[in-house]
Length: 216
Image (cartoon, rainbow, N blue to C red; front, side, top):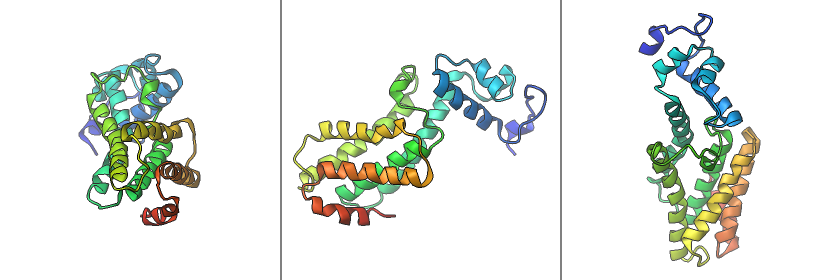
């Protein structure tokens, strides 16, 4: 049991929760942020939804921005861990790009902390949420590097890697507009990765071998 849990901060109604208080706060905030936006949600509403008194919420998070930051970083965490693991591998650019697109789409559709595109939350500024944006930019740059390498190696069409990565990343982020899970999410992720590769492969006949090599 964590020290914060042993402190026994009271909940509204005086009954302790079954799980970590931080998790209850974040779960309540995710629902409210999705429904009402960041500016439209108050810490009092989050506390009430989590079954807490507002002063108790501030024991765990100093303000609303800290709650949003925790959610945003949890949304990015699986993708950052994936990139770190992939950096140790030696996949050719087409296989690496397929695996990358498939994983990012799957995470966007199944990670409970993904509450929408960053563009949906204008309050999520680069100044206030620098760590999140560093991680988000790293994920986007990875697509650019795969495409640039594939073009240089003659695997992909001769396209501008910057323009291609921006357009294809928008395709990947389209997953934010859908709500699927389980087998459906895995199928959607494979479909998106296939579309990305079909747009770039100089030799479409490579697709099946890329898909086979991309399996875990």
